[in-house]
Length: 415
Image (cartoon, rainbow, N blue to C red; front, side, top):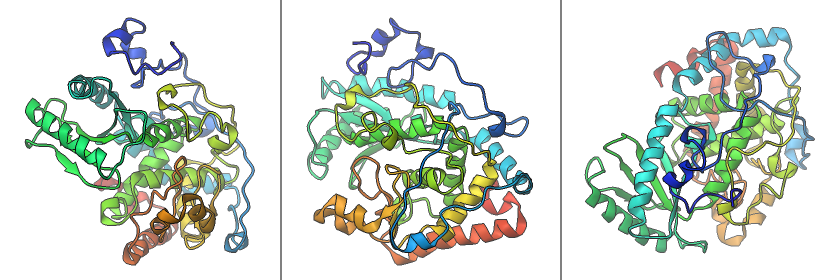
């Protein structure tokens, strides 16, 4: 049973098997050795690299019918002179990543809070499991990231509109009695996937808890693997999220893009927007391993990565410019949908058809396919003005960078 997810065991039981410092938050040992950092991906002197395992590779591009066929699929491979052209941008992005990435101390505080919460929640639901998900584990989080957690009380589906809200209301009452919550009572937020939110007094960590949204476990594992495949992925995602936040386009509740959608857009660009490709489609390489069904309790973190080797040696700055150019000039929002699952955009019609008639209303101005349930993670962008704000942010920033070659226009210093 060592190869199963250790969800039924307490931390004390797990620690009798392996030292605590050798465990990942889902109960899995860290890789015994880290692979050496490739010279081509090395950040500037004095900047620490990402903790991911630098592997990456080549893959065939998916060809689309229609408008996108007339657009160039990739720009030319940048020369050494081009790389030097964006040296200051690269240095700024690496410095930002080093200063703002998710820290071991923050992860330790989240783990301590997770243990307390699990013990308390089992007084309500004795057989429940509680999983840390999202950017805390993917490598895409910052040192100010909250803790997203998934409370699993059954292997059956939970009605998010009715059952989940009732369960979270009970959870909120329980947490109110503990005295753990800053500001008193936790807040139950009614959304497509409702959550209970509070800030813990002891750790200072803000927590969002959902009920049985198990797709979050699958995509956490998938994104963590992408972060480990290439050492530039996590710094690029973190930089894009910070840039989008300063441009006011990283707030789903205000009708713009969620951090998850931005991460998927970055991965899509690294799959098919640069030449050679930086990342593959893991779901096409190993469909049985990254499938949308099966018992989530059998999922593991920190497992061996698939073989993949990339010839792409572009700098972090060059990749950031390429990301802006890809979505400003080459990706057709009106006809295409981001699909990390396929490793290249699919047609909007294909994306809508896969979700069924009942969910067609979610496909509006920007389409970003969720890799497992194939919903639109960018469904919050339903207002034309917000869509225009997003498109202008890509165009304006690209134009400013091409004119100035300075990272100042990214506004990272004010994050």
